Length: 428
Ligand SMILES: Cc1cc2nc3c(=O)[nH]c(=O)nc-3n(C[C@H](O)[C@H](O)[C@H](O)COP(=O)(O)OP(=O)(O)OC[C@H]3O[C@@H](n4cnc5c(N)ncnc54)[C@H](O)[C@@H]3O)c2cc1C
Image (tube, rainbow, N blue to C red):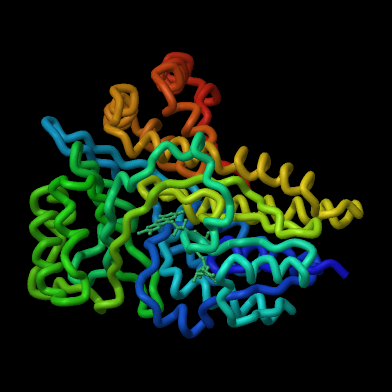
């Protein structure tokens, strides 16, 4: 009987493992942390799961948080400047901001309950990976930004940055009134970075979540450099100052008396070098390891794509494995080359769009935000199409895409035919 070994219990490893178990394939998951250790760890991210990722959870029967009243129902994009641009688009279907310390342990328990084997052991160094090759027909590395992913050669052509373009601070707070309708505030501060405010579902219920994406050396950067754990009051007062100066709409909903960081471990700082890698390495004797999720393509979180791309690529890898096994084809080099091509075709657009967004916005990008501030349909299309990075990248990659996109709306207005405009979110 074929056996797949997966290293890493993040969204990529778990959705892949659950997918393979749903098709009756024997599967072992190597994790450096138990469910309880993940629950009590530091805030790892502030991920929003978009509609197609939630649809995959539904199909796997792991949609434990499908409450129609809680979600992210709109994206409020604001661009600081004179005048300030502002638009509010509906996300249809709604996204879900969820604490991965709530999400991942539950999926790990689901995986075990469905006959998956969980081995509580980190896999390091790379020589241990080769040993896993003896035990499994295919080894999948889903270790996120962890060191093990470096066994896959970096693709310099697909990875334009050698340094982080943003430094990150994320934290969970109480004392910010939720907006009337739950949603994301996406405040762009030209030359300095971005500020995101959302409502994140945690084990203690929904809390306010702030993510600062600071351009190194800019006005937001101080927050990414204060020692997060030393004195929460220093962090809190810096956050308030930055909100007041750059995101007044959020600052107006802060109650200074009750505003506080929920717990010291509810904040994180990071700096990510967006990196794409070749999806496979040979382990010897005809055995291979393939990379998926962040181990294959690490996105900066500025456009919310990483976890969604991880889910998308895990699902595609699962399909490829199931198809190969059903046809009696070996999981050999040819299989791996096919996986590399397929995963990049799915994840390349979100990587390229995200990488482009990290540069100063060109006039054609600003033209979309400006048009969205005047036309509700454009704001809605931008918000819903966050889940369709292939379409977004076709639009945003240059002035021609933007012109065609905006022209579609102009024509629809004059002909009253909305069908000319593609606003459909990606399918699963
Ligand atoms: C602040 C922040 C905000 C974000 N916001 C968003 C967002 O809004 N939307 C979005 O889509 N994405 C977002 N992301 C990105 C998202 O979190 C990642 O893309 C996603 O978690 C990648 O999933 P993964 O399964 O590939 O890796 P991970 O989630 O990193 O999981 C990897 C797992 O492997 C384990 N591991 C590591 N090394 C080993 C080893 N040697 N042996 C065994 N186990 C190991 C780790 O402990 C971890 O559990 C954000 C990221 C950050 C930092």
